[in-house]
Image: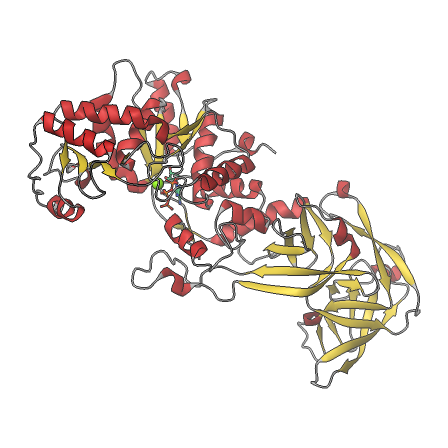
Length: 558
Ligand code: ATP
Ligand code: MG
């Protein structure tokens, strides 16, 4: 499936910026976009928005899109994350033009830093991080200049070279740009370009003892790749002045200067988007991994059974704006249901079984009934299911005494068994603790679904699903609820975000009974367990474990 054919985040303000640039003389062939993840975690649904945006523009304007790993901090990054990110983007249906790494530009970035030193625009500061932060001051009054700000060029060059060669320990010194300690924009107050990190890098190994900061690497990487439009989230708006200052100082006549523009990040209710926090959940074992089906990661959503096309449809609906807001997670569920309804194979599975005995059905009889695989699409065909005297139904689908609003099975009332007959509850048998162990009923032999008889067309109040006790398979089913109880766990600054984890976010049914056709399910197909929701075979386990993707319906409309 190539979803990129259908990307449409509406005509948004960023698209307008590109179009204006084109009408002001930018050549169409100069358009180039990028998606720049830091490989310090798995991608989440927020990244999907940025992926759809950038790859969507690539599609709209027939322009290349680079995948650039922003790998400037070896302490947190790994090839495991790089592989996971590539897998997720591919699964979403996108193809990058070039696979790039900020670490491939380390030599060039170093040379530019030397150039800045030579121009008197960068210096080595030998103060501690705390001293530097303190001197930056507050936006309303000027910061304090570092005592090392006026070091001679020659001394700076010597010290910077020593930093590179590993003569110093982390924290001993940093390289700073010499800009303006009284700028109202704090990012312009002599920002750090390089810090000493004594960690081996997953690509450059032990070559470097110093690593560029995000600010120093990002814009220059865009420039090296000749990215025309660099789109990022709003928190980088205040970095833009610095981004432009760096570019002005390094750029060659005739080369294209990338343009950074910002959009609001995606926030989703009842979950978190910070990679640092997601990583904390993984590392503390509070979830089973980055691809735990409760995680807002692309891999978690995939494992849960959300199709890529639902994630794309969701991103399209959310659109792009300049204002931060929190999107209701029910919108993602809505998009998921819309697609799953069309592509899911139907099966009957009883999660919490209780035995049902049809007293007037012949003892050893078994019949084959026909059921539709997908009422939305005839091309999915039919399947056979067996029916006999003893069945399983859902425990919650029976009540001895029920009010008028209970449209399931009760004593003395009729319901239809899905794809089969109309039955009437007669009596129950209970165990020593008083729990119902067997339900006895009678059936109307003429009411068989699809037989065309007048009785088969008879309307009864409810329909319930069932599984033949003589012909079933045991499976396990995971039912998920939201991961957090709080609507915006990220925003609570007083309490630990983990305090609002929902303790009941996973409930497992280990004795679910499924019709035998469950043996034919495939990993890359989607299923509806009738009346129970949409389900996906878990991709991690070899046993028959199913994850519920989403319930069948919600009252919310979008
Ligand atoms: P985090 O703060 O969770 O670590 P990040 O922004 O540092 O996220 P990156 O890997 O640097 O993560 O992000 C890659 C790209 O995805 C960036 O361009 C970033 O702006 C964008 N992005 C990250 N989170 C979101 C989000 N919630 N909504 C939209 N875009 C996002
Ligand atoms: Mg980032």
